[in-house]
Amino acid sequence: METDARPSPSGAQWTIAADGHEAVVVEVGGGLRAYRHDGTDYLDGYEADELCPGSAGHVLAPWPNRIRDGAYTFGDRSFQLDLTEPARHNAIHGLVNWVRWQLVEQSPDSVTIGYELPPSPGYPWALRLRSRWSVGADGLRAEHEVTNLSGEPAPFGFSVHPYLQLPKVGVDELTMRVPGRTRVLLDNRLLPVAATGVAGTEYDYSEPRAIGAAVLDLAFGDVVRDADGGSSVTLAAPDGSAAVHIWADGEFGWWQVFTGDTLTGERHRRSVAVEPMTCPADAFRSGRDLITLAPGQTWRGAWGIRPGA
Image (tube, rainbow, N blue to C red):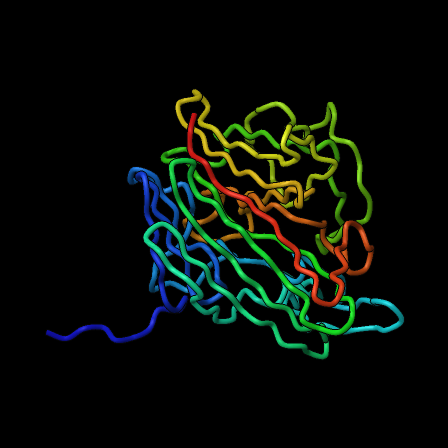
């Protein structure tokens, strides 16, 4: 019997499971390919033989979202990144989403993977990244740490790119709550030009309401914090029979929401990318909530997904 020996486009696959929860973490990009509970997929992921579409589940570092013209200044030096979104002349989604991460530690319900980012002309700092993915009674949990291995301060931002879905509920029917009091105004290259309050506007999701025909690819800031300092976004079925919550700790002060309108085929408006971010787009240029990692300093942040009505 012949077998298909072709490697997966996403590399090695690490499956973790516990308490009815199961997730698949992948080598290429170190991201999340699947997450389900009791057989229901809450992550709109992709197949093992499929190239990751739309940055699904990717880890975005050392910056999330976009940098205008890929050009920025840090200290007294100017740098130029490769334009990975050439149509809009931007550098997008960082430097670790298409590299091969390495297995560090594995157990039935968790896996830790890592990657050491070497210095490059556009980002001349070395970083060590570690991600611990785990599942349990409370759902999926991701714990990330990033250490500056360089001898000088480094600019840094972090995000992840999961697409959330509910069975048999399209984007238009989903009810969403986002705890952001402001939203970022964008130009035609999806880069920030200002921020404005959302209260009383069509972008006010501080109380749950249907997404409807809204086309969203924007960041919400000035988040309302929970008692523990974190925050969360909820997607729910219109009748309240099902819901999925994505939470993030106090390190994440922004939520990016993308309704998948530019995706093609079956993925078009099938799910909502909800991305916890430490900073908004273009933070390398604006400095808005940009983290500066001192030599040897480690940043740590956590987020997760929890199903439940």
